[in-house]
Length: 428
Image (cartoon, rainbow, N blue to C red; front, side):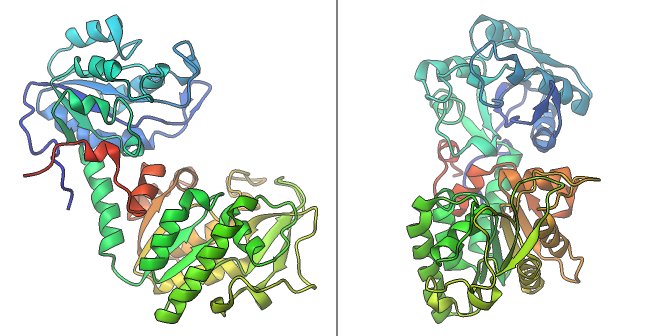
């Protein structure tokens, strides 16, 4: 259960509220290409407006170079939010100083004001006390609802809570509750599917998954490092040589867990390779199955068969059909699945649509997760690339929970405390 106070726990009637949202949405030529994070903020906003508050919203967007970086302005978000709320949304050209103060002072009950990008000021990420105080001076209560940023101790996540009573919004409560429950009390069997590029970025969560899950499957560029750790030649595939010792340690730990209890740790059995990342390029399948599955006790001692290997000028760009089927089979036995990271280079579109030549492994896993093969587990989806791909396929509503926070969800799963959550008022 969420242990912090939420907007339901305090009287907000008629007050001025500063809401930290996460509107770090993708923009293309000044237009929002995906408004999922805006949509997920609406329940909190609508609840607050029902309390007749004066609502001031702050957020960041992208990695701006300064106040004149108009490509990262939140103005397009204000326009979209106005459409979704079907009411006027005022916009301040700065988040602090005279423009923000004047806009906040003129705000009426039941009205909404969106401040300009917090990260136009370096003081935001530096958790500058004076900057946090300027934000706090705009309101009477602070509401944290930006789950995607609560793993950072910034002025708008931690600093501001020293000057205002601070509680959680409905999205933050749901995110923390769902992820915490799925880690501590999952409906078993529990399966985790982990992709991404660097093992170091997910080392804590990988160790924890090995300890609590029944099946851990690894894909994406991260899997290349595990293959290299077993002595398999991976050509020009993306991997991090510095992560090889981490990969070996994880494989040894996974082998040890397999001796204690029924447990599966799966690296790709086969892979899709090409000599360039191109939607018209020639691909082929390299099969490692004769030496890379089954007896995980011997990790990382296996070596590739000479007859099947990645050429020196090739790259691994996706898991192969056998690996995809192996993971899909595991999904049929699982009641809870945590999925973080695509299985291949899903950013490359196909010749006639969004499904590219290196997205077939990811697509097979999606089909299994959605119950196309008979069984549909409860699935928690996280990670920027994973959520982005699911959104591009218009499948967000088909999963149990699609997280709005990549780094925050990983740190929460890994057992870390989140500064932006810890700073909130606790429930009595």
